[in-house]
Structure formats: structure tokens, C-alpha cells
Image 1 (cartoon, rainbow, N blue to C red):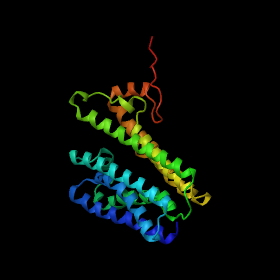
Image 2 (cartoon, rainbow, N blue to C red):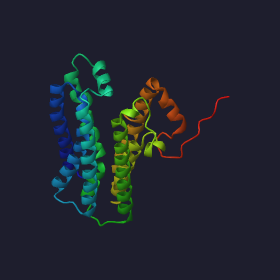
Image 3 (cartoon, rainbow, N blue to C red):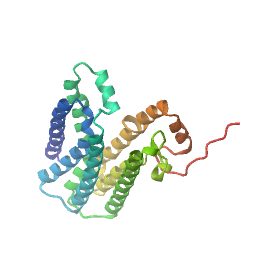
Image 4 (cartoon, rainbow, N blue to C red):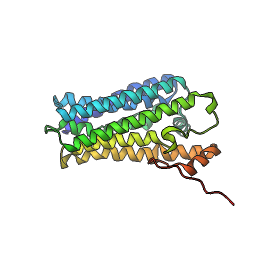
Length: 264
């Protein structure tokens, strides 16, 4: 992807982030950035297509997959945010560490950073759109992996939403459906989706390998930065049933539930 198209993609992400930042100041809630993050990534991809004035079959496949992913995840996060108007604990902690003056600081600590990350994650879309070659087997494999990840993540989110909506589930841990086989099936599905798009970028040829920065970044974010690690540290500290869940359930990759060792 040429630099003259990459920079407008970054500009699109930054423009959305700036608008959401203004909204966050009005609501005193930085966590409203989450439902807009998928939209930033999709906006970057669309910008690449407009800038290059072409999108062959590979580009349309990648953009269609990204569009389905972005709309679903944005709606899912948006509905959840609508029902919970309080600021997410992760962002509340950032606010506490950077107050007073968090309102302005959040422009670069939260919203600018999210825009740059979204731009990097959009790399496979740029590689796919810029490609002029025909489709090959790697495109098919990548599309299938991405579709699997999208379906897996959507199913896990739907199961968790139903669990949380049931009053009888209060005080218990979600360990049914996909959550019986992985403590974070939604994150696993998300990771699969972006590795699928990474494979589509590789289908361009060796010069598309740079786009693997996207799934690598997503994997690190989900496992170490904002996903499994921090979330589990909080849950283990505050919820004893979750410790039992950890003892019998794989963390990320789905697998057979374990039988905890019996104390003697």
C-alpha cells in the first residue's frame, strides 16, 4: 500500500477519534471509545479503496469481512454501553491516574492511541485493496478462518449476553456453551478473524507480509494489554468462583475441560 493512501487512512481514524473525544467530554466517559474502535478500522479500509480507486476481488472480500465484523462488534458494544452508562473500570483507572486534567490528556492517552492502533490493525485491508492480482488458495483459507472467527466470537458474545440477562446467573460464572471450553472464546474468535485477514494479505505475495503486524498486534492486545491478563487479574481478586473456573477451563485456545485435582 502506497504511503499517500496510508496517511489518509490514519487521518480517517484520527477524525473519528477526535469526534468521539468531544462526545466523551460531554458525557464524562472515556469508555465510549470502544464501540467506535471497529468503525475506525473499517473507515481506514474504505479510505484505502477510495484513495486507490480500485478494489479487486481480494479487496472486496477483505472489506466485506471487515464490514460485517465492524458492524456486529460496534452494535454489540454500543448496546452494552447504552445499558451501562458508567465508565468502564479500565478507563476509570486511567482517569484516576491522570487527574486532574484527564479531559485533555485523554485526547492522546485514549483516543489518539486507539486511532493509531486501529490504523495498524487495518493493514490487511490496505494490502488486499492495493493488490491487483487474482485470487488463490490462501485467499480461500484466510476467508474461511476469518468467517470462523467472526461466527465464534459472535456466538460467544451472544451466549454471555443471555447469561448476564438472566437474574438467576448473578454471583455465578459463565461456564456454558463455548465458555465451557475456553475462558475467553470471544477473544479467541477475534484473534482468528484477524489472522484470517492476515492470510488474505499474505495471498498478495511476500510483499504483503508487512500486514501481519495487524494480527500480531491484536494477539498481544488480547492476551497481555486489554484482554485476558488484566481481566483475569481483576476477576481472580474479587471472585472466588472464577478461581475454580480457571482450574478446570483452558484460558484461550478451546479445549476439553479439566477435572480439578482433589485435595486430600
